Length: 383
Image (cartoon, rainbow, N blue to C red; front, side):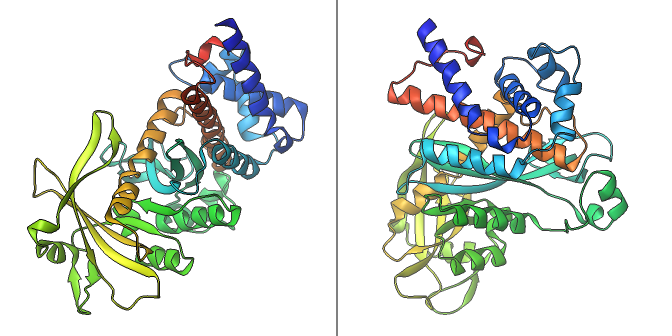
C-alpha cells in the first residue's frame, strides 16, 4: 500500500507540473498545487478557509490571492486540462462532446452573473449563477473540459455593475447556445478526437446552433421538445411528436443506451428520416426514445451525421449525454466545484478551472485503476 501511495503522490506532482508554465511566479505555482490538493482532500466544504487549513495556513488570504490577485493564465490552464483529459481518455471512435449547464445557488446580488433564473440544480427559479460546460466522454472515461459563466442581460446592460464584478466592457451578452458554440469551436480548433456532439433541449431547440454544427460538419444528436418543427420527407413542416406518432409499431426497437447506476438504461427507440434536401453522404433523422414502463413518455432528438449511421450509434450518442451529469456530480461532491465563496468574474473562472483540473486528476486515477496500474484507495491517503 505504501508503494501505491508514493506512486500516486509522484503522479500528482507530475500532474501539477503540467500547469506550472501558466504561473509566472513560484508563489502562485505553489498556491495552485496547494489549492488543487485541497480540492481533492476529504473535507466537507472546500472554500478558502478549509483549503487554507488543509495547506497548513492560518487564514484564507493566500488562497484568496490565487483567485483574485495573482497573475496567471486561466484560459491556458483550461486548455491544459482539456489536453490532459484527451491524453487520458481520448478516443476517436467513441469520443463524444457533451454540452450542459449547472446552477450554483447564491445569496445577494453582487456575485458575477447572479440573478433570479431557472436552475436545473434546484429544479426551479432561484437566485443563482449558471455555468455552461463542455464534457468529453468515451469508452475510456469522462471529464469536464471547458466552461463559461452565463451573464443575463440584466448584467450586460448595466456596465457599472459589470465593472464592480470585474467583467470587462468587451464582454457582451451571449445566449447559452452561443456560449456552447464558442466552446465547441475551441474543441474543434484544438483538434480533439470526437465524432459527435450531444446536448439537451435547451441547446437542441436552438436552430442557429444546429445550423452552425452542420456548417462545420459536426455530427450531432440534440434533444428537442415534442413541439419542435421538422421537415418531413414529403417536404412538410410538422411537429416532432406528430411525425413519431405515425411510426409503425414494428419500427420500435428495444435497446440500451448505456449503463446507469442501476444497470443498462433500456428504452424503446425509433428513427425517421427527415429533410430530404441534403448533401451527399449525410443524413438527417428524428430519433425518439420511449419509456418501457410509461409509453406516453417520449423524448425526441434531431440528428445529423454520416448517411450510413446505424440506429445503435445514434442511441449510443443520445445516451452519452448522462456522462456530463456524472461529471457534475463528481466535481461537486469530490472537487468542490460549487463550494466557492467568490464574487468576481475572474475568480469564478479560476476556481471552476482548478476544480476541473482536480476532477481530471481523478479521471486519470480511475483510468489507471481500470488498466490495473493502480488500486483505488482514498485520495486523501496520499495528500
